[in-house]
Image (cartoon, rainbow, N blue to C red):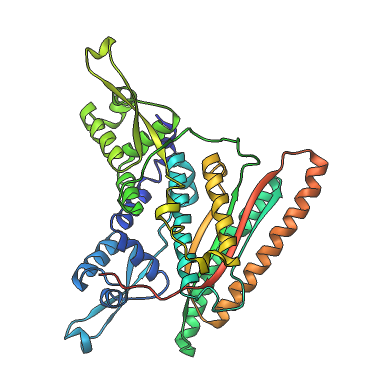
Length: 416
């Protein structure tokens, strides 16, 4: 049996639950927002849209059945509810892979998740800069540094970033509880925690040789959902990360194990081509094929530099492009792209590409800022300590980029 399926046997149910969230983009927004605060379907619709109150309510119910939402209480009839009692819900957890599931996923999926996560960060940073909320508060905004570490230093930094991520959500919960008594308004803040390895030179290459492919016009969470719902698709992607493979070869290797016919496997290969996870890279004829053509497939990588023409980096106004803040983020973006191309972005399981949307009061904001400043100082101290250890040990240094940020974000735009 393949490595991925062995690694994912205990995580299949989690992936299927994640598929429920990712299947429709608004469900991911529902889970994210309701992890910050309690809301009813009507309240969510009034703030974010989503087609109609009835349609939003259907998504709430689907998420509740899958365990993503829990009913907190019901509001009594009256007011705008026109006689109906309305449920108030809260998300039970954030929608992301836990560590064991993450490290078992095929490389190309992890790379795509990391890149699309950074793409979302870029959109949020640019949006905040253009709306002038990025500069609304004088405290911590964005720092990005290139540092040298050894293995011990990398582990310590990664663990500290993980602890910081958890701490931000604890600060949000504390702020929410305080606001119940103080009635202080909570503001929306974004925090980013990024740590990854960068190549030491432009010729370095790690990981599978993925093929370039233009991503389809399908929201990325939906693409993930279609894979997470079917462990056979994950195994196909893993095999195409390892090298070129055809439908007959995959059927011979896994058909009996999964109890699938060659036609059933071919349909999955065709689906993965349509949604951009694999690509036809070769054909063979002759021999036992009896005149038929055998197609060979390989996993795809994200179209990184296409984003400069159509993504969050496209058509940046001169006023923004000339700012120091955008220059810092643009430099970080280039480092992420180079690391993705070289294979170092996801070379280490403990890499971080986290974006958190938080609802905080003034005390919570000050606490997050202080915590990020302490983390920044800790990372710099680890850099100094690692340099001393490297001189003694002769160990090959690890070059990392660590980026930390926190800033106020503009209010959400209501979708039709």
